Length: 433
Image (cartoon, rainbow, N blue to C red; front, side, top):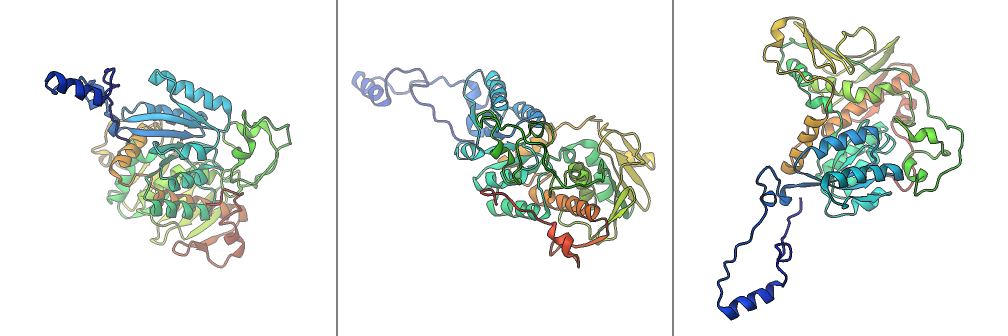
């Protein structure tokens, strides 16, 4: 949001300020010459003054990132100026999209995120890389003085979750995790019922992990590595362990879902569903203290006695990413179709209009407003840190196949050396943050 300074040249004059003053004094002319400034520059007629615009760059824009960017571009106070991606075809596609919108050729392209982040005119960045990059890129951006909207899962390990929260505390930058269901009316209404005691004393929270299998990531067959101007394989890997190039790894949701556990459904969908349960339990500053695999489910328990159940079966047909909150006197369940089902119709009093699907517009608007006010977003770094730790701890319990106890103050497993070793992983140079 950098101030714009209009020059005489921009106003249409063909001589400089000094020449203008000399000519006016020589002829005795009054200097009260009116300047015609377009209304859009002053923020009139629906325009946004340059001083109020948020200058945005994007890092790693594939399918999900293209959707997010479209939501950003709908906001009148956003000026998108730069795209960074390791794939040339993606850089070029996003530049074309931006230049078409603005009617110019001003969108810059970068292969290395450090070059984009070096720009002093950029206020904020959208990070929608593969999960191997999310946490590292977010911290590098914060250290470069940028506010961050980061897709999920945001971290690869418990240790990186803690580092992410600490980085944004230290730098004072604004962070929004891409857990957009925190900004959707049906989920907000359900959480409000739990938090305001409308369900009675909270007892059990249910989240859909969408798969409870965990396996270590491996190497695909080696293929000839492309020219780095087309695909920079080394930058694509970034902080992840090196492996040979394989073209299949460049498409879709890539090989790293956190901690090397590619089957970690608790992390991918859990970063939405478990996050909502955390919020409903007023647990944005803590995590469950026990994690136990129970057949096709994982059961966790908070220090306040509330149980968290991760399960894929037995849900009402309310769309993807369902959650259910149960108290002593009532319950509520909701999902991505926007409907809410409750134990009694009275609990639905005051429910607003239905919003189906999981649009990111509300969440992105919350982020932009906080960039301007320096307020705390709905999915801030601290809340994202704890929700991700709960997911990582669940994955570790599943991977080891046993009950684990966790100390949320010391952020370590109690009496389990093997589990504690899985709290972190090696980060490839030079990306240690």
